[in-house]
Length: 78
Image (cartoon, rainbow, N blue to C red; front, side, top):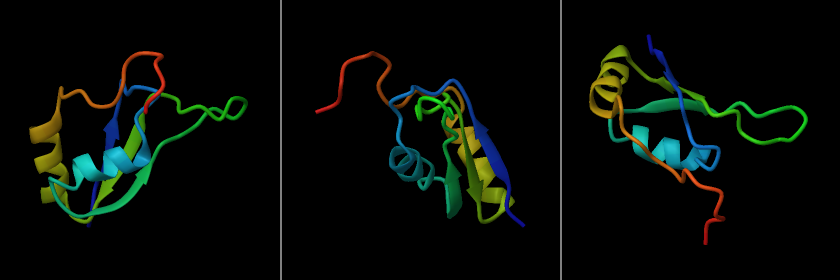
């Protein structure tokens, strides 16, 4: 059975696709959820990544804990 990993302190500019690509390095992903604010539609700064098995989730935590991704400023992407 898989495990859901919480991804916190995320840039508002980080996309679901970027998370999918980053976390896929650790193993098979079954779902990526980036909650958004109901009023603005803007991401809330955290996500959940679900893995096909516990070993892949553990590998992601060990490898990616403390890593930064995405844009942290208000400049628009090209």
